[in-house]
Length: 280
Ligand SMILES: [Zn+2]
Ligand SMILES: [Zn+2]
Image 1 (cartoon, protein in one colour):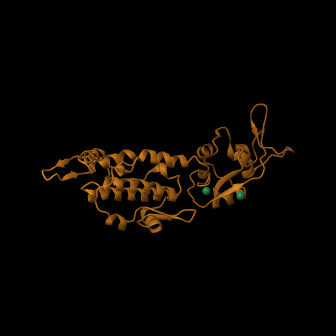
Image 2 (cartoon, rainbow, N blue to C red; image 1 turned 90 degrees about the horizontal axis):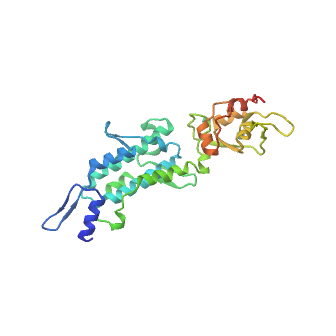
Image 3 (cartoon, rainbow, N blue to C red; image 1 turned 90 degrees about the vertical axis):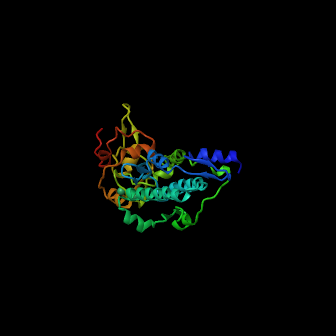
């Protein structure tokens, strides 16, 4: 690497010191304090409590997506930190991100850290639905890493914002439909999809949606709700799926439903529709 490239590396690392000694040894240091304030701005760390934080905007993702989000971020930062002389202290930052990941999983499952460590281990790994393993870089792997100069194209700082964007886009994809129970505040993860074959939906001259079959029979139950929103499937955890099937209504998450079906359902009374009591 040329001296100019070193200077560029230093600039990229927003360094405090760039010492060019008489022996032409160049020292590059990562400003740890400044980096923590960056993590605080991104919502990973609380400077007040001096502690890693869970990230609420990630809890609607699947476990493996949360872990793969942190994995991309951590691997990016590790690469970027490796040319710093204080790489060993920079590893503490990685530890904070690992804790933030565990706390996000704990928050998602409404469990404590002990539970999360028991399920995912300290290396934070999980199987994807496709059977592959997703995990953070293991503690062992990180311990083995030494500081070294990398190629200049590896000196690009990972862009946490675009990672957030990439992962929040998944929330709007159809896969998201299958990842959460449609009942308000339900965090159960055993999601089943209830399908209906045929919708019964009529819009009268005033624009009002009626859930009526061709022989004017009023529908009730999940079929009526799906007809009202004009969609053929709804994700429910196994508990709520059964409840709905036997006719017990629980309030649906209207924000979630608006988002996944891309409709405005503010004027629909799901409970009345479910019970078949919708007035004409
Ligand atoms: Zn069903
Ligand atoms: Zn549920």
